[in-house]
Length: 106
Image (cartoon, rainbow, N blue to C red):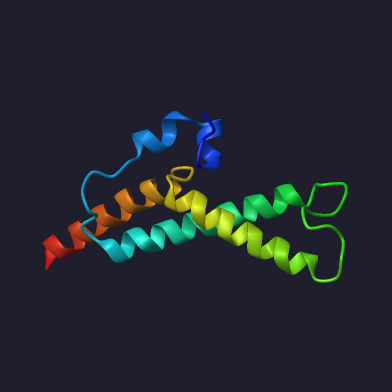
């Protein structure tokens, strides 16, 4: 069976372990954490594809760097939304705990 998400091929237990059973208490915070993880993942993808010896996946034609950047952005978003590498989950737990502490002080 071919995995649907790229990260499942490398780390098959990670997405299943991070599946959220309930809606997050702070949906805006959860979305921001996923966006931050996607940004970091995009930077990793950009660094990895810059090591390719033949240019990029889209060849060396004029404008291919634009398509390469768009591909990296969308791939990073998809990876983050499907479980990612765990940074969003860690950030969310820490920041929602901080929000709870601040709200209890008021």
